[in-house]
Image (cartoon, rainbow, N blue to C red; front, side, top):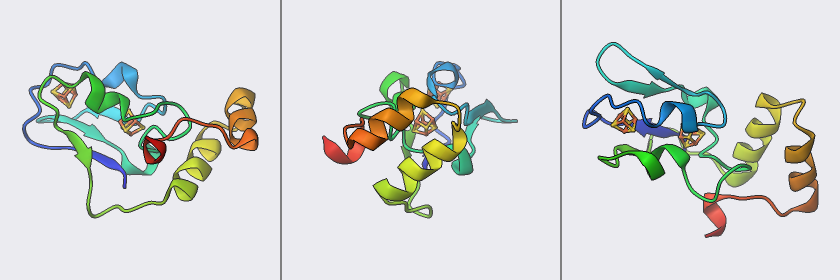
Length: 101
Ligand code: SF4
Ligand code: SF4
């Protein structure tokens, strides 16, 4: 699943710089995640970085956007075609993923 932000968001901005994919922006009312750019942090972190810093824990899985780990790591590579370290982690089969905790 992509992660999404609920209306419990207090607009603190803490999550935005933590996203490895620059998927988070300030919306008109609350911060928002572009699900097309969210990989649930697969490939970069062991859990969702936005949720890890959110003071109200409102960055949660979007039940309308279900993705497998395979789909998410493919998205990560597509979003970072120049990231050789990411490619090496994926090639080794040893990459951080919320599915592996
Ligand atoms: S789960 Fe990770 S990739 Fe998705 S919006 Fe949050 S920080 Fe970005
Ligand atoms: S960290 Fe949480 S409360 Fe702060 S802007 Fe992001 S989603 Fe909203």
